Amino acid sequence: MSAAAQPERPARATRPARPAPVAPAMDLQALITDPETRIVVCCGAGGVGKTTTSAALALAAAEAGRTVVVLTIDPARRLAQSLGLVELDNEPRRVEVPGADGELHAMMLDMKRTFDDIVTAHSTPERGQAILENPFYQTLSSSFSGTQEYMAMEKLGQLRASDQWDLIIVDTPPSRSALDFLDAPNRMSRFLDGTMIRLLTAPSRSGFKIASAGFMFFSRIISKILGGQLLRDISAFVAALDTMFGGFRERATATYELLRRPGTWFVVVATPEPDALREASYFVDRLSAEGMPLAGLVVNRTHPPATTALSATRAEGAAEEVAEAGGPGAGLAAAALRVHAERMLLATREQHLADRFTSAHPEVAVRTVPAAAGDVHDLDGLRGMADALTGADDDTPTGTPRTRVLPARRA
Ligand SMILES: Nc1ncnc2c1ncn2[C@@H]1O[C@H](COP(=O)(O)OP(=O)(O)OP(=O)(O)O)[C@@H](O)[C@H]1O
Ligand SMILES: [Mg+2]
Image (tube, rainbow, N blue to C red):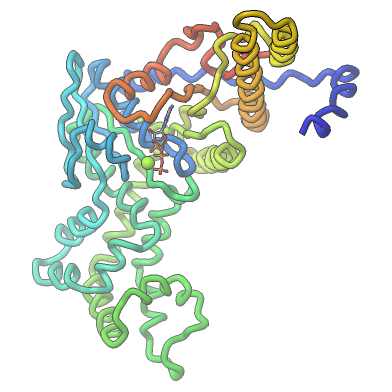
């Protein structure tokens, strides 16, 4: 690694790198306390901290006096427990937050229940029952890829329509791609308009049209359904849903529009890693193409050093000198200096990745959130994260603004 890094040095000495553009600061405190803000959607790649960020922002908003509900999706067990979410019941539950001026409510999305509720609400009792009992429906409602994303949007629409909340914070499903959340309504309504189902079920001389594009699309679902019943189930499902197709499409469109309305903001979450930031980058482009408002990028789980006064190179050098000099405590001091040097290198790498993002998206506001010592799974942990998300931009122990992992180099 050092061999690969060395040839760069002379080049750097003769041609100093242009300082990366400085990202604008993101004021999440102002955003979540603004009465005009009604929906905040936290998106990002898998495992970057969407659920934790959603819960922490909701807590901060409740403490600032708002009546807020956070719609979480598959929260880690301990986090769910600390929010009082012991079982899936698909309805918001109040979370006791001692001393909060507002109210915090939390819920976990139960995608099958949400789907069932739509069916019941939009069909006659007999027809509804027929759909709910249909094995094809049962598989679709619990395992169609995109169902979770679609149902999260559906639930958001319901929460918004109830007008019970000042602010709704929406976590998004653990998809491989953050874009899945935005694509889901379209995909779902295309699926439900039945064209593909008809294509599959239409009598054909060769039986199933194995080669049709639709077949691949359904293969996963179909494989889960018992063979003999298959055609009958699908036909019954299509017949029962027929009257609802229009309804689904309209709802998908309406919910999608909700995301474009003033008062909705997207917070994109990433970790300081190439894949997560690349995903964030796609998502930012997509939001801008769709005219959806972006609050900014949260770079979560960063590793800022305890001090920025000592560079990695100087810390390494000092560690060697101290170790050579020997004497009481020398070993420990050298080890501490090396830990600092490593931390500086890590922070430099993280800052470099964040800079790359900012070079591509100079207008996107950024907030870095340092990695906590352990998992964030209780109200205290969430409060710590909330402080990092909403605290004043320059209020850090090292004075490094919260847009960054390391201070900006001067031009
Ligand atoms: N700033 C942080 N410091 C320490 N741990 C964190 C931080 N943010 C998140 N975590 C931990 O990282 C793990 C993943 O976080 P979280 O569940 O919020 O991610 P996610 O994006 O919702 O994941 P998924 O895509 O699976 O839904 C959790 O164990 C959480 O406690
Ligand atoms: Mg999650």
